[in-house]
Image (cartoon, rainbow, N blue to C red; front, top):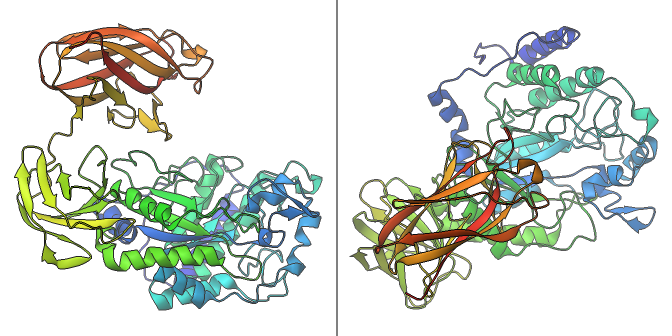
Length: 589
């Protein structure tokens, strides 16, 4: 329940959280629940939905070893070195006296984010190593008390964000803590043995209360690693603390079982179709690791990073892009350079990202991506058409077309049966993505984006091109993707197709099927025909094979909807993982 009583936040939070700690000695008998209307939720989430682009910062003691232990490189992520090398607690804590980031400049960091076009920052207040990057009163294991630095970078960043108008958020590892007894994840040091209840009551709750009370206003709290030591009662206790301190805060879905989360949080990948109807945010590194690792120079190109941002926005999500400062407090130059280039693009084309909704087209456009705002379509063109003609599959009347880079120069448009054709200049204004704006009347009405036959008459029904109906079936992975998590037989996939050359087609299925789900059946229907197949198991869900599924006949040219349903005799088991169906003419037409 939201608290709107006009009393000082710190006092309210301190009193309520103290009561919660005392109550935690007894099991929770009821689960808190956020009670808000859709309008209240929309208002709370409004700034986050408009922001689209944020900076993630992973910074901690791990920046001191920088990926090396006893002179040898560690093969894992920089921030996981304590875990990967199984470093004893006392030995790892000895990095603290070496940590003196005198080059840290909160104003410079925030200005870097702002110049990149980022609207919010989320920094690690405490990562899995258990070292607090703020001046906590819980113990002395923090950057203020345990290092020569003697400053609180979280306080300085909060102040700089407020000055620059950038929203401020904090990451907190509530589950894994390899330093404090009772925390999750440390099975190599006997000194770590302890009571998880005491860990939550004496470390997590007080520190969460501190970060939400002393560095406000905190706009986002970013939990990490679901489950583990955070069972239902501990999750409820932490959430009650958050609600007491800041009921309007936005949280990811990694606190415990995710029930209190405001948004989905895919990591290091972009879901092929996003999360339709849900808020979501992809977090991703610029190079290969989150925390600083001096040998990791595998930086993504500006093109990749920028097209990731555009792709995510086209699917209705946010992009939280990570930087990993070193132990001097410096963000690596290659990361700063790429962020500046992204910001330069956004200065010209930001209207295609900020405050937009996802694409109105259910299938991705071959030449780029689309976003929308009332009365406008923003078309980010990756592949500039050689003939200068851009076909946009929409049927709305167009009142004006122009490039965001050249807003005063109108482009010629022609309405066709397949959509609106825009005549473009010979050269693209931007080599990475050029944005065409269509001002249209009414809500976008897509023209049928049916899959067409290839030159040889075949039809490829890929997972990426599937339209999905139901609650669980989803597109998994990428390059190649597959239809997976098919645990509800009421879920189904379908593909609108346009057949110009009819005939009889051989159907080939590219699939994986765990032996535990043997006996599943798939039924493909098109027009008035159906084809049912019982695929033979493979060695597992990642072992794909091709198999003939039979034949179907499409007698006449026209538009069809090919539907695929599934059944299984094993409750809670998947029907199949499917990469594609290929329909090949059985004989020359």
